[in-house]
Length: 137
Ligand code: RTP
Ligand code: MG
Image (cartoon, rainbow, N blue to C red):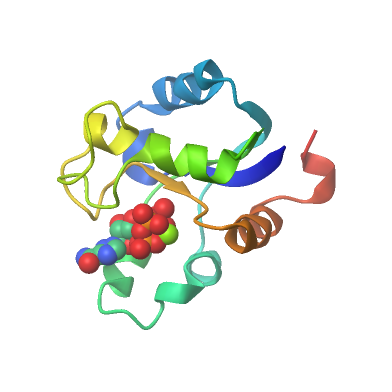
């Protein structure tokens, strides 16, 4: 069993996709171990996307990810990190295959509905950034 951090971004919440995205995770057979809605601060955005702070797109990314509430989750299952990444589809929705979340619900890279940890190290770091131990069931 493996845990990953998964998040519905502000565009997904605004577009009322929370139920559908959560349903996909549940129907796949993954287990939701923690879930909460929150608004990401500039400080948390810089920590969460630490690997991107020096990239040219970071200011747009920060503005977007702090623009409204998100739904953050800890998701568990066999190979959960890669499984969730596969369910998300490619970063650029134009490249994302139909049947993936981004391939079904998004058009542009700046608003791609979901985030998922990309490695075991990221998963541990991101889970600890968003959740206290006692919030994970
Ligand atoms: P995420 O972290 O949000 O799950 O997305 P990801 O792993 O698929 O992609 P990543 O490389 O980590 O990029 C984080 C977010 O930054 C935006 N981005 N824009 N304009 C660009 O070239 C560019 N590259 C990345 C995307 O919104 C991406 O989700
Ligand atoms: Mg990423």
